[in-house]
Length: 188
Length: 188
DNA sequence: ATACATAGCGGAGCAAGCCTCCGAAAAGGC
DNA sequence: GCCTTTTCGGAGGCTTGCTCCGCTATGTAT
Image (cartoon, rainbow over all chains, first blue to last red; front, side, top):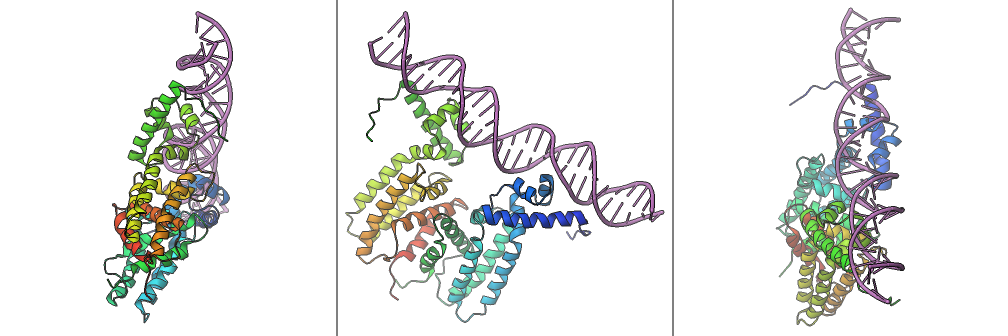
């Protein structure tokens, strides 16, 4: 499975970078549903070239997101050392929320990939789920968070709230606080 | 503003009904993003006819949903008499959830209309919000539900969860229970 | 330096969906 | 049965996604 791949040809590499930059701009401006033809045009590259480098919209999104996902994973690892597992989890959920609201439409893209192993974003979703699951397990062990709750639940809930926040003005954070309350253990 | 409108011509009425039925089928099968051309075709009606009766996709959705919205409003009024305002609210939220999950894509359609007075679905959203707000006020007065929380919040949260439930298999109800816990007042 | 093999380019062109426009057809009042 | 008015319906224009393949640029071997 370890394919020896020679370095990209100079023109290929240049076009790849230009496309990535153009995509980032377009996503920031119009959301992840921005026209791919526009992205190719503003990267000054043919549409065929875009599709060769990124066969699907999701592949392009994945490439744009990649660093952010890595960062989130690193942050989760750091937070594992926190003295308060509950606070650590909530802190990370806020990071996750910030990430999911970077581009309009992103939450939808992630959500639709979460159970689709064929999607280029599937790997990112899995990373997020396991990162979250580790923090979650800690908080659950400390008795702070209800035990029925999975890493997948976390990612889904945050995405759902991020998505809701896109309609209306930035209520995502408030809604997150609201919902987060429901995740705590209760004395019944 | 009270326009006297003579009854629809026979052919118009017939086509209207056929379109409505075809739309219901298509929405059930492919979700609310089903092709309008397909709907017209399966109603055995020209595409122009569809657009005359329903100038936008949302107008068509609204027509399909109308009865359901009326029912939800009626249920809310009944539940106002319930001895337990908290249970009444939760019960109604479950009804609302059932409604929002009727067709794939519906939650998205509702959500995008909630702050768009130009949308044909805006009226339905408002009805839901006020229905919910009445039940909410009762439950808040009884001290069962946190006082910072609006009818709009309820509709948005339920829609967000319904949307999340579309990805994966029917977890909407479980997620609703989870989140509903967060809406209760807490002793801090 | 030159030539060659090939990775890479790019846009014409097809498909699918949305929506409009207007000549043809049907309805129903008289 | 006729005439006005409503309604029908699909051709056609537009946008967006995506593919295919002849042409070009690149890197390497000589």
